[in-house]
Length: 509
Ligand code: HEM
Image 1 (cartoon, rainbow, N blue to C red):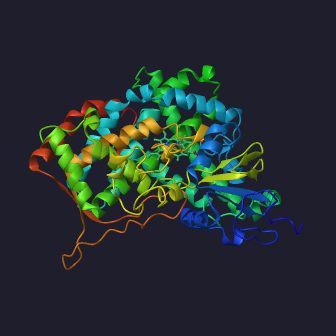
Image 2 (cartoon, helix red, strand yellow; image 1 turned 180 degrees about the vertical axis):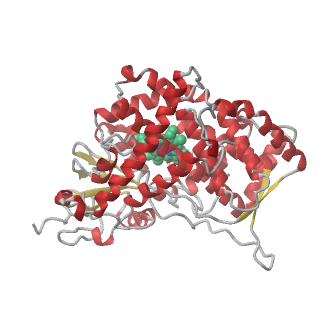
Image 3 (cartoon, rainbow, N blue to C red; image 1 turned 180 degrees about the horizontal axis):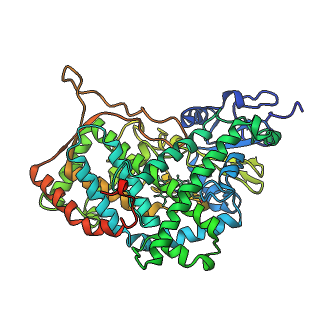
């Protein structure tokens, strides 16, 4: 018993452990990437933590990340066991599910519907939604978060179910955010007893286990939402009113894909979870950085003015001629990644890495934050400097061997890397060029008229980060541009209509 909690021989080094609990007493409950990075500077590019009998490996060396997570991804593609995930989703969560047949079937289907060519057919609605974002922002002095969140959610709803969310207070959107808030809260440290460390807790009867009741409520609200949305798609298809959304294809090829109704419902619902807030938090970070770094904003605007001019909205094709703006996008991912530790993977076989033993069943964190803020790899890593990506593909400083890095690292590694990358990149690209073309983003001013410096560290504290609400002013760059936006929004009406069949009256435009 005394051995429990201590580091087994051959494991990578790490902070000193206590009997039974290991490193549980120092395991970070907020902003884990900060402390993981501090430990990486002390214990190296691979280190370990013990939580009871569980082993956690933290990788901050890009070479080891590539070696273990890409080259040997056959044994590093599981997710850590989670009783709560099991209770709530019954093992059907595409992002949190275990590495097995269900996940393989879902993942193959995700590739079929989310490949670069497949998502191109959604571009018209994605562009129309981005135009609505500009339109919504025109009169906005403050409170712009809701518009960005609406955009992001509406795109994923349209893409999956063919049903958009024209308004922030539409029924489906409100239900989704209520559910996602509760779902996120139950994962927070301390929200449940350490069931995964002490599985005997699973046996506690529900009347003595409030967390079980909570999990049941979340399960119920997820099912209500996911299956109702799926039913709407089925009904629309029944009437012959197709709009090219992904679930039409999945439903049509259900048998071929190896799906059944339960799996189909969760597949779509959990893709919606993964795809909604990620894009909006990127766009919030972008605006935060534009406000905090006005010289970057000016340089990006000068570039877009030169290439696009003031007479038309930019298009994705323009991006090829906008190298500074492409660098700005990479730098936003590097500076404040959405998932600074990606999502934890788990091993299904023993492995050796960097000369150390990694037991089967270990949890692996890729410390993206520690990599992208490493001064040995990047000049001045704590500053927002898009120019670094003009100098080298990975933004690294001269003389660094960057062969293990890739600009898409913020979307993950190996077999669990983000299948929504093409849809996400289209959204990011369209909106970044639109926003820079259309608006000036400036700090809000205090009562004495002095600009309030935005805090680029004011973020949510969990494993998925997003800026906390902040104030800024958003002003149209010219009346001519405002006019173009209003006109384009009106012209998009026809596209919107195809994604509004079956919307409740309260949710309509
Ligand atoms: C800015 C936007 C996005 C970023 C930065 C992002 C990033 C990530 C990252 C880091 C992971 C974990 C990868 C790993 O474990 O190695 C992930 C997983 C995932 N993402 Fe994204 N993502 C974004 C948007 C989207 C969108 C729009 C969708 C849906 C269409 C999506 C669907 C998923 C799914 C389903 C997974 C789980 C994959 C699995 O476990 O097999 N993501 N994403």
